[in-house]
Length: 189
Image 1 (cartoon, rainbow, N blue to C red):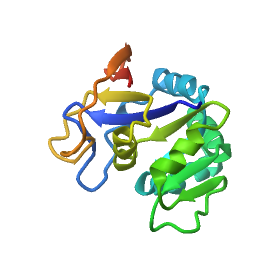
Image 2 (cartoon, rainbow, N blue to C red):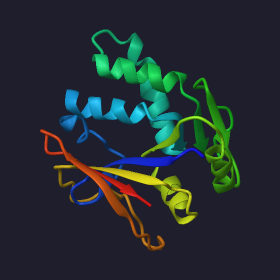
Image 3 (cartoon, helix red, strand yellow):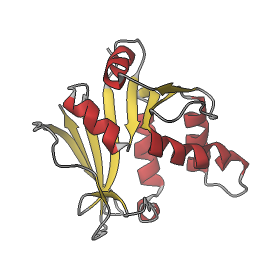
């Protein structure tokens, strides 16, 4: 059975983005150490899972990185990885994704993700996509959460967690502090 892993970047005060989806605060803490950690995680997965908004943000940025002169090596490598990786996006409104290797999960998303987990291969990685991830968490499909807490206080924004979420007990299996001040917490469910 494939492991379902949720990777999310949050501010110290628990926001995943600014009020209008701003993520400019994230780039400050991204260095070689950060990317090496990402690459270690990517070596354990072979499938990407997204909510619609995160998918569309990735779709706008990542396929074009290899064409931009001066793109950092780590970004080029990630761009190639994500472009070739099978991608699933949960959406009731998206019909024809333009990004290659993309499949839309329109209904019964938890059931479809359960089927993906039952497949063979490496794990499934959810990038951000809080609404989807919390839905799968409440459906008891999540195996691991990786929270990267950035040394930034946004003051306001979109909360990573919301009222109405079921109670879940997590087991800390690893923590890591990066030189930039980012702390990654790995939890098993």
